[in-house]
Image (cartoon, rainbow, N blue to C red; front, side):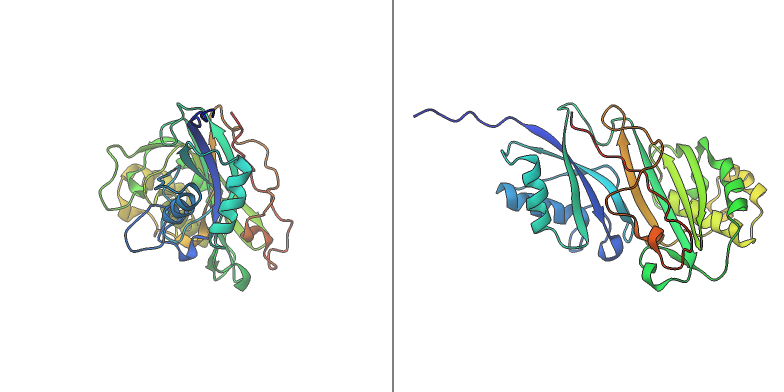
Length: 289
């Protein structure tokens, strides 16, 4: 009787969407509900072994994702579409694996050059979107916000916008672009870069919203950034308005380019009070290697 050859090791990239409302963030933690722990439990059930995965971004409690990416190394013979079907059956309704692709063996999800795109959403009162956006009491000035955001593009010391707890060795980060857009009563802030400090995007959003409300002058953003003093910036915006839209790895997926419509639109773009065309979201699938 011929012996079966042992299956080859494969490195898989899984793209996930989740409603972060009822999660204590992405990263596995004891005694709390996290996305990573649920994904690992589902994969462990499928492969009959203890599975650990690595995520592209450690989203905070309450933060959502449309394009989170996780790396999973396996010797299982389960086909790629088998993972999609199996995980679809095992995961709860507020998290979904939307794509499974193979990556090169030398790929490292944390250190491979990439671009991440976050979106912060705010809107005038809309009960259908309350889980996904910050409610505003009145219309804000998105043009002033866009003017203020221009001071943040490029490589800077972002100490002004970092969390107060122990930070990484360097507060130097690069923001490739910021776009402040309006669709009816919805205002979104898109921030693109390779990596971010803890709470950095939410702190930037909170400060830009202060500008939009008229309580902070747009031209003061440069002074606030250069101060490196967290007390000079606005409040950290609530987690529920933030979504990780996409992670694109150089050589594995396209750079951020002209947006295209995803199969499942991000909820804040579909609100009944938007009174404007639904703005398309960048769709960045991870390609088969």
